Image 1 (tube, helix red, strand yellow):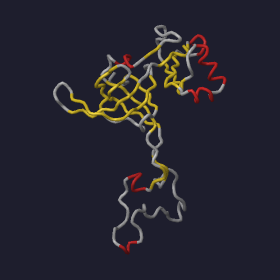
Image 2 (image 1 turned 90 degrees about the vertical axis):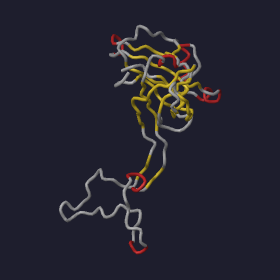
Image 3 (image 1 turned 30 degrees about the vertical axis):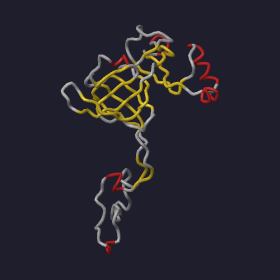
Image 4 (image 1 turned 120 degrees about the horizontal axis):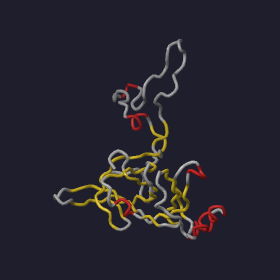
Length: 211
């Protein structure tokens, strides 16, 4: 596993590459993450780095629990909204209190980005599973239903796990192999779409398959 940075999705943009081709990009703000803790096999059973990112507002910091405040006070930084840990083999290059920014991805061609997809509430089967629905004529009796789900006397029940109308979105999703278009300061431009709404928390790492 590679180091995972904490960022925020800021929206979409269009840029032209060196060949004049229009590229649709997602703008990700990857402000400097602070190394909060180093995990080692000798003490924790594995090697890893714990990062804190996305600064809290003053009101959020005032409402933070004492254990969280104490955890950040050990490092001497202000409390952050998100803490993320990455299991990596080589941890000697990192130090507690170190700042890691978007320049971490300057040499990478592709990244994987993880986020929570937009929640769309309770939806029917046509929107959720792209089912065809019933006939459109007035006398059909059903238009946007999924049809009968009953079974014969054997087994006399519906098997679990079938498709039904249910909640849509709000799931943890990872989009792999997003091409890195540009890294400018704390801004990361990647080609394509990223899960989540604007200002949503995302987790960025170098591509596992094409890194």
